[in-house]
Amino acid sequence: MRIIIPWTKEDLDLLKECEGKNIEEIILLFPNRKRKRIIMKCRDLNIKIIFSPKGTKWSEDETNLLLKVYKDKSAFEISKIITTKTTTSIRNRCCKLNLQINKLEYHYDNKDFITCKLCGIEKEYTGDNFPKNSLICKECSNKLNNIEKYKRKHNIILDFNKMYNTYSIIEWYEIFRTNKIKCIPKEIFTNENILIIIKYVLTEILNKKSRKEILEVSRKELYKYRLAGMLTKIDSNYVNILNQIFPEFNYKIWEMNGVIGHFWEDINNVDDYMRWFVENEVKIVDAKNEVSRIFTVSSLRSINNHILNYLLLSMKWYSSYYEWLNKLYPEWELTTDHFKQNIAKDGETLDSMEELKVYEFIKCDLLFDIKTTNNTSSKDKFYNLDEKENYVPDFISKFINPEIKLIIEYFGFWKDNPDNHIFIEYHDKTLRKIKFFNSLDDYKFIGLFPSDLKNNFQGVREKLTSFLLENNIPIPSPLKEVV
Image (cartoon, rainbow, N blue to C red):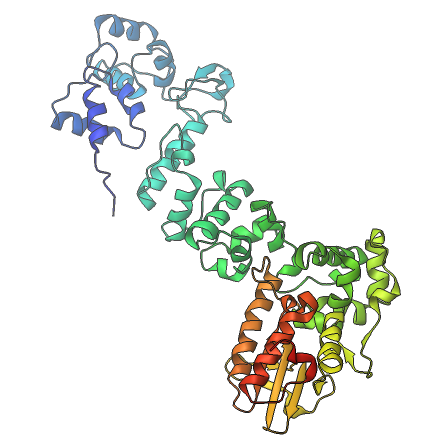
């Protein structure tokens, strides 16, 4: 079924301005319309046009010139002499005058230079530049063919001078995404434009603006938006693609679901990961006081970082975190003392120096009977069915009269306003833990935070005292000063 393109108001206004002009000039103003349609519309609107620069009829001078030059020449060769007439008009005139012209048209061998009637560029008349017997160059002919093809097959109107730049790359993508065309024209299917399209999908269609939001969009999710071929054309590594679009976010390959092949077999990648973790994730400021809290197996597990433990224990690039960090940050002047195990006076091993201080303060200074859960039985391990998470609290204390079991958990990585995904995840998990522990019928719960350790453990004292008073439990003498 042929598609008739409706005339717009702008088209009709332009056509009315063409009154008195030659049809050949008018055709150039409407490259997407056929000659026949333009003539029919002019007749409908009573717009008078002419069919040659000298009028619709052959003048006497033109006829005399034709009689003089027609012998042994083709219509095409005559059109170069009588430039006001087309080859069709010349053939019709010769037929009417019974003039025998050469049917063999112009040969490329003549090596003349001809000006293309559309683009106005003078080119050598060869098979590389012009179709046979045509005054329109191949480049312009191809343009006209493509304009006709897109109009006929897809109802897409291309401007002759702009061609595929008639529409923006986003407009082309929307046409492609809605399956109106099978592919975006190769002339504008560049890497630069593909990056523009991917950014458009992420930020406008999916409405992902922040670093974290964009990171959460997987490569496979983008396939739903017909981007599979584009992603492959740009780069097989999705992280590289994101960094080309959002260089300010500086994504790392390990931030995705996994790393490629033998990535961790290169020690440079291993060291890069440690630097990234230290400087961007935990943002260490006071190394000598922080490394003992962060760089333990259990501490790293608590913030869902399993890569560092894997690199140290399995890949064995370094014998210890002490060796690893000293190589990367010699200015910290760390010693083995900063990485010693956190062992309490009674021999219990704690996950961090802060936990050790909390444990010894509660047990030794406040005389509470608490125990760690490092080697506890399975009955002191908890499973959150709703969240499908296992919890092992830091400390448990048992009271006989009344019979009460108390869970004490120290949230050492807690921040009121978490600033990256590690602390955001830790923050969310902390809230889930607090909700779960408070829901247990057989246990009471106290949550401790870094702020509770300030002013000689003032927050710890107040929370424990409040718990004892609420449950009618005798208050140890070291706590009576708080009451």
